[in-house]
Image (cartoon, rainbow, N blue to C red):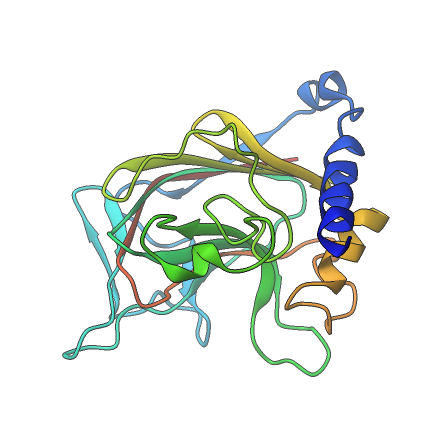
Length: 238
């Protein structure tokens, strides 16, 4: 019965946003900013400074790559945008190494009570076939393009395997969030809906008050011990 209730909550969350006006959004004037043009990392910084990390990330052939952890070095750690964003359309391409696990976080802040780390909503990046975390969670909510540990990806989307590029898009419009992958909607939800709040209460984020509900936050690219590459990163805001 508990599993059935979770499925019903997920369906309700999808349905609650289908009536949102696409036509109204298309009329909004948007400003586009390039966050990574193939060479400059000026839009990004380390979590503990205002500078881009000197180690753990490399730029080569127009690609930004976080290095894997090895016996010789620690690998790359998280980086965040210097700016914060509220209403946005983030677009980028992602290539996972075999067995990789990472994420793109948004609405990222370090102001949750009792926590000093940067936390945010996570677009899951993972090798579904090879990383064990993809098999955990509930109803597939830790698989590629999921809202990590909260909401699963629609089964109809096409996900390219490790070693190939996937086109990722995240749209935040007021309280509505949409995850896209390879031109298809992976999931959509409202951050202020009762069904979303119920799913958060069942997740690893249940102890954080108003998780994901703030007005704006940073974008974060995760360094999680595996090699992951990013390119063509841009954001439109309004």
